[in-house]
Image 1 (tube, rainbow, N blue to C red):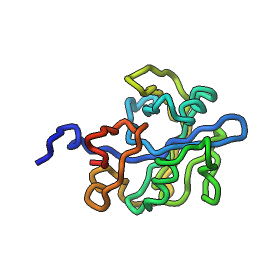
Image 2 (image 1 turned 135 degrees about the vertical axis):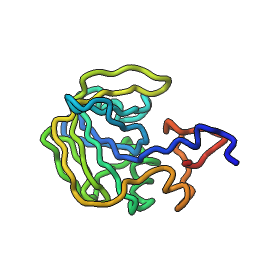
Image 3 (image 1 turned 180 degrees about the vertical axis):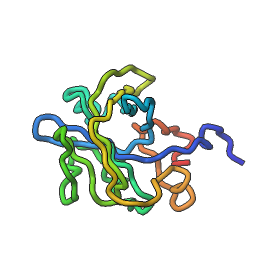
Length: 173
């Protein structure tokens, strides 16, 4: 039986991207959800220590790649366990630039959202960015990647800057 009820909450896994000048960065997060239909609005939570936080704060925009269940661990590792301060996370990957000049991934992505930040607030070590959707599209059909799915398919360690991080429970799910 699960000892921590919070581990029973199911989350999607997404790649949130942003830009600073001509540089791009992004990360894997489980914090993306719709908060309003009109105007269409989502929010994301980004750890203040992450480079992507710096980029979103600077350009006041972010994009979301909604990942498919077939997303390989290598992509999750690149965007979830490595810092954009040390590597170019987009090197060798297929991506498109949105109308806002921010990339979204092509491979392993079901759909994308482009946003403009309309507000933010602090929640613990995260900043919650509220983004009004300015453009979106479906790239292919499929099932979205979730923490529950990956818990049963793989036991991925949780990065220390992730909202789910708990030193006593180091795996998604």
